Image (cartoon, rainbow, N blue to C red; front, side):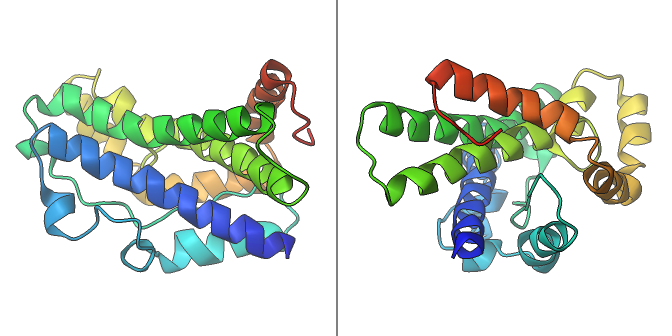
Length: 203
């Protein structure tokens, strides 16, 4: 049952993440995600065989302390944005920000006493997973959102050089996850959130 809950919460959070990218891109001039039918909470258009299913299962199988996943990235044509370099950062930031907001919302629900013995653990799982998704995606490794945020501040010629590493990006990410290096970044954030909200998040 715990694995089912993790998957449901993870998929929901990843979908909100991607929809947020699409909504901000649309607001800034690019309707590609809307035209592709990706501005929806229906999970079917967002499911990615690797990021949504295989990656979380792999991390569970190897006993990784950090479980992450991803929905299929929403299509964004940065050339359609009003200010492509600036707006690329805003669109990219929207996803992680949505995860942080979900974590805060779940924390507020718990602190207001609106949870019970059933919903409480689910909300705690939601907090941890959304903090992981938010922080994880801010790491500046292509194709993660953090790389696009960094790229928006770089000269154009350096942007292309950075994105050349995209083919190797997920290999680096898997190495970081397998070796536990990402825990040194993620765990302190989770611990700090738990202290701020006075919630036991299990870390």
